[in-house]
Image (cartoon, rainbow, N blue to C red; front, top):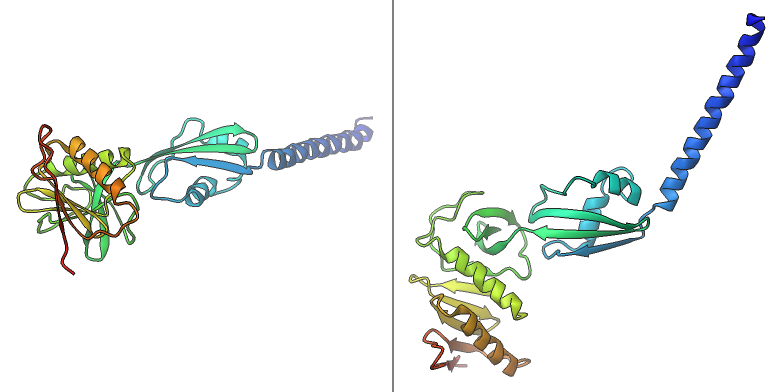
Length: 248
């Protein structure tokens, strides 16, 4: 009897295995089709485009599947990406994903050997690229004889880097961004907006000076002024502002 039962048992086991395989394949197919990402919302990105961020998170096997991504990023922040501190991936629903990008707090960049070298508030070179990033100012006038990645720029006053970051943040708050920030040998600064140069002088009263810049820039909006606007002697009680146009 046992010999006769063995073929039946083997056939039954094969049928069970086939049924399990069909069920698993069916479930896998449902996961692939029903959790396919059709919408990705990206927030906080400046250096990278939204399409580039989407490519980063969807890179790899089943990267366009919300269920797979939810498991992959459940307890993991996206790190080790240039210019980005972390990226958090949140699954909104089975077809939608929200990505929150936290970029590095870059103060500005300098040009060095045909590269754009980005530094933070401490002057540390944290990234380099072959193209500039919109919204981050080019900084000129700082003197140094060498630079090393992940080390501070060797300039005379390390506090200048915090000043650069402060200026950038205040400008951003007023929906402005300078094309360039120039420092002279006394670390007095000049902001460049196209052909308009704004002499801010020292870091004193930065907020008030930039408020004056905002008001003045609104009055000349749409016009191509070339010259120097001097706010270096600005005081809260006596708002002294002068403009010297360039000679044609």
